[in-house]
Length: 262
Image 1 (tube, rainbow, N blue to C red):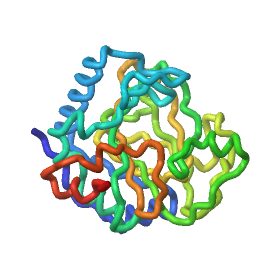
Image 2 (image 1 turned 90 degrees about the vertical axis):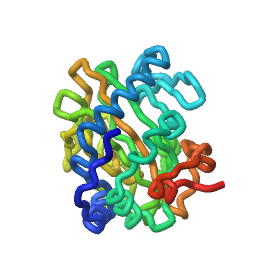
Image 3 (image 1 turned 135 degrees about the vertical axis):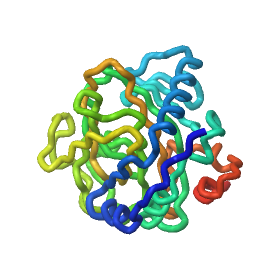
């Protein structure tokens, strides 16, 4: 079994980038053999699900932890589904970077994977303040005030995000700044945005208050990524919290250190 790449990471630098701009990039965090193996496992899981559609405008629940939605085919419960990957899922330098932003008591809220394809249109600008979709606040006409780093999405890409494969767009946001969108969320380009054409095996950490979007994919290959969300001790529990993590057992000390307990 391939192991994660454990090359040098500067936790202080990455944590400060999250606080100052709302995101940071860990390039080539996982080696290609590991990426190939995990991608193959995910595609096998997809086959076992009966090859359902990879996008729908209206959410469709296929199983307790499987949903087809605007993001694509979303599967929570990566650890229960793939326990053999538990010992290689987390990279020590990345975990330490997130801890320096969130605090020593941070926990993992959910771990899963998403597959989409070219049927998914431009995924417009959105954020996840308090673990809620931005539409919750748009409909109510107000935005919460969040002055600290409380929740980070760790997005590990198993495919290159070249221009034709759905690059990730982020709009830099300093922790504590207002959350209302600076431009129309339906626009495909925002002034000041950063387009991330990262390579497979790269992890992008995005604070919950950072607006981000995804360009439409043009090629035929599926676009696969693993998503793990971590939160601080003071963060309110959100709807995507996976209760199974509170009783999950692992021999890996790094993973065990971030698992929540009931």
